[in-house]
Image (cartoon, rainbow, N blue to C red):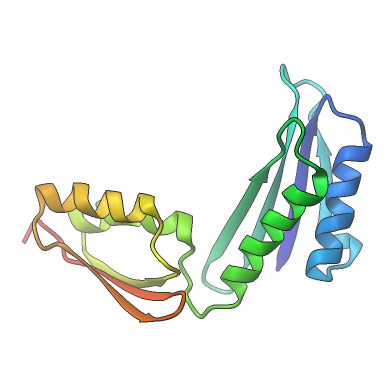
Length: 156
């Protein structure tokens, strides 16, 4: 299941329409995969593309935010690039989820997961966890965009 929602508030309809069109072109998706949600009661204006990539045992979310002066095409391309990057690997854990798993796994049960190249957030979180629980995290490169993260529970 692959669905993208373009959230918009207080912007001309043409902005999310262009983002949706560009996103469908970039990913070769049909219309039903991209929906627009207008947030008329929002206090502020802006937009975001939130893409849900659903699989049997995991869902990955890819997000991009519109900015004043940044063309809709560039926002859509960025989200499409992130999605293609994730979909082009066998790693079930995306770049932005990996850093969030480290502390709970280290404190609770430990575990092993595969992810894309670790982000700076993941590397920083690993250092923070290891400051309290030395040798609790190991990140091993298996190949391009494929890393195994082993987290040993610190309560043993």
